[in-house]
Image (cartoon, rainbow, N blue to C red; front, top):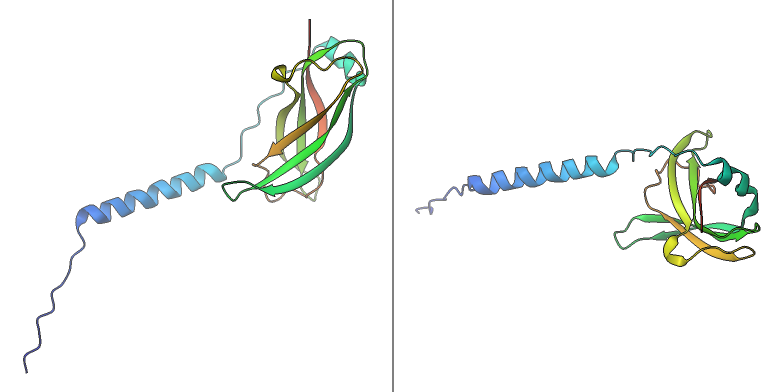
Length: 156
């Protein structure tokens, strides 16, 4: 009995090169996305803004976790900001500082709670805010971040 001759199939070189390129790109993308986000330095607030901070109040602050469209965890900080002073403010930014269980800061991010596009926060007004965070590292202690008013821009 004669056995059929088995043909040895070779993988084309182009397929091998393409597979290596895909692996390298995937590894590079994974490295880039997993590296820590650089912290942008806070610009010091003006003396006028520092004096006005006591007139801005945060209330009903809570935290929620949700899944994004890209299957990433998104942390949301929700709350209200009130202007108890006598000047309208057109921008207010908070620096949110996330810590690990040892109290070490693991992530810091500046986010606007009052934006120009939403109009000025008038004296006596209270407004809801929502701050989404999707780059908080897994070493975070799952507690509400420390929130510091980092910037105030007054409406003219």
